[in-house]
Image (tube, rainbow, N blue to C red):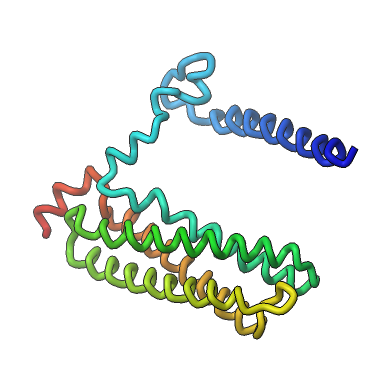
Length: 205
């Protein structure tokens, strides 16, 4: 009876999510009649574009990992903050899980970012931005390590020195969001690691 009680809402949520995804896909097509679109499934999702080919075509795999800390640090901050405010230990536990995943994602992101800096030509401005980007990433890594250790020092799931913990988590969240903004400017404004821009970067470098 208990299993059925939780399974039914879950099933309804999954069905509702699938319907919403289909509706969003159909809505996204509206207003973009650049060329004649194929009919059927290919008109919604083109299977020829699937398969993670971007991992082979990109200059490096760093962009595949950067979104994990960007999503997980704010999630950890939100869950820890609400858990402490509302005195819900289960929310704090969920925040801790997000924190551990954020720390792991940060480690992989730093490693791939370190390797990425030598994989594409870049000019002096991008190099300057890239060094700041790297140092901010290392600062996030230090914060993640401290927060992970601190999360084990708790009393009834609540970290000891809770407000200091939240302050450091908020600082880490700010740093990772700021670094995401800097990384996006490097790519979308300056053209870092963008294939059409690489020949010009080679000449400028």
